[in-house]
Length: 108
Image (cartoon, rainbow, N blue to C red; front, side):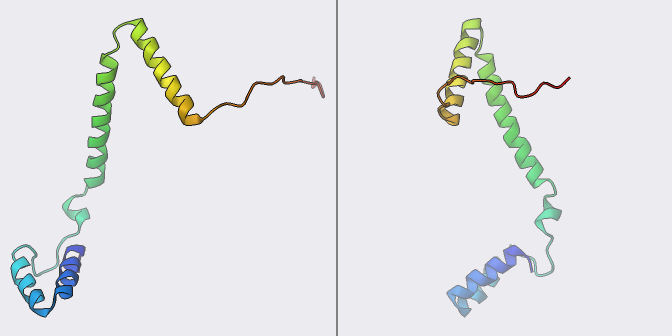
């Protein structure tokens, strides 16, 4: 039994036995009677193709943003925006204080 057949059988059983018979008759054209192949056999590269498509969309977005940078001033403004966003994500840094460094030992 595969996931599709399990879902159809369990969902149809909740509706009653007549619905189960009608559901099987109705879905009989959609689901074969014999053993069906798994998703891994039907779509072996499903995850890889999903991630590939997502990465390509993200890369094209980045390319569009980079194409908008024409001058040094544009780059400087972009760097300021990125730096501000990074500091917002990281949170505030602690206040600066003197280090008061002391030499404890010297290795030769």
